[in-house]
Image 1 (spheres, helix red, strand yellow):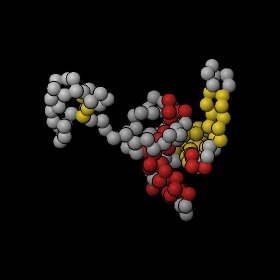
Image 2 (cartoon, one colour; image 1 turned 180 degrees about the vertical axis):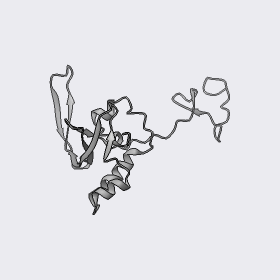
Image 3 (spheres, one colour; image 1 turned 60 degrees about the vertical axis):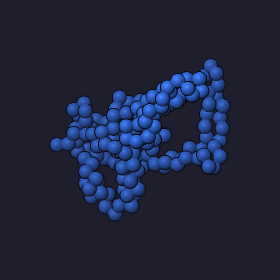
Image 4 (cartoon, helix red, strand yellow; image 1 turned 90 degrees about the horizontal axis):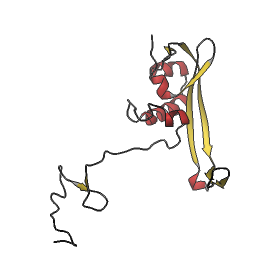
Length: 162
């Protein structure tokens, strides 16, 4: 008997261990490691149908490395070829696309808003220096003959070529 309940805690360690969650008697399977590398996803990424179905692991880290290296590339065209990003491709809707421009923006978050109850007003707080976040936003601008389309790194990687 142990603190009012009578049972044994079987294997508490090792490869086949049962990991006890809240209220230590509620067994749960071991959880995989989770990485949260980009807290500032744009709305299309955050709410898109494929937002949680990344085929390529750590794509956010690959994108960050691309941005760092692209900025210093002596020959941007060759760098794009090396990265295997298409100059011409077919969009999911069948439109023919041609790469026009690569945009890298520097974004710095310096404030925060919190909606009040009811949502008609909000509270604004400037962020202290240690909470200011800086990031780069990468976009690829393709033309389809009528208009321009701005695509993310993940969207460009998913384009059909040929």
